[in-house]
Every structure is written in C-alpha cells, then in structure tokens.
Length: 103
Image (tube, rainbow, N blue to C red; front, side, top):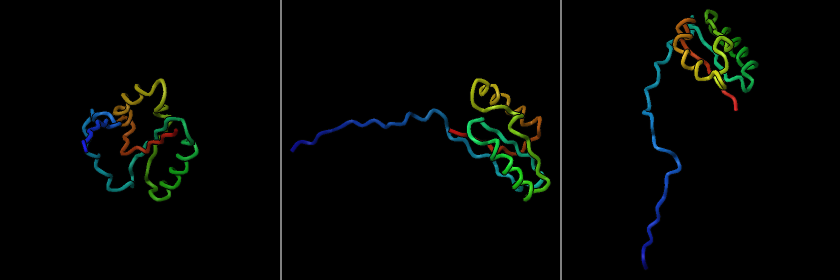
C-alpha cells in the first residue's frame, strides 16, 4: 500500500500586523468623558441615547460627546475622520469611546 501526500492551503492570509497590547482600562467611569462613534448604519441613533441615560444614572458626573461630532465612520469621509481622530479626541478631552457598527 502506497502512501499519498496531499497539499493543503490555509484559507486565511498571512499576518501583516503584529498584535498590539490593549490600552489600560479606566479605574472608574465617574467624571470621565465618553465619546460615541458610529458608522450610521444600524440604530445608533436609538441605542446611544439609551446608553447615555443608563450610564448617566450610574455615574452622574459622566460627560458625553455625541457621534455627530465625528461624523460617520463608514463611507467617503471615513479615512479623514479616522486620521483626525487623535486630534478630535484630544480637543474634546475624551477618556474612552463606545463605537457602534452595523451591518
């Protein structure tokens, strides 16, 4: 009996970016500024007000920066919005982001 050899290909491409360590977690949300970012595709306009109300109830001194401050993170301006993100976050003194994406 002869042994046959087969070649197999891994369906996933090669890694091109090294995994970066996660950002440190906030010790508390009290007094923090949270930004909402959205791709304008699925219900962010409904979900973010609910999140803001619930988080505000738990952390009364929390501040929010609405998704309209940034614009849609999907579409023709996506690249520029992401490129400007560090400056926009610094300008609004954002401590953390809640990013919504729809399909």
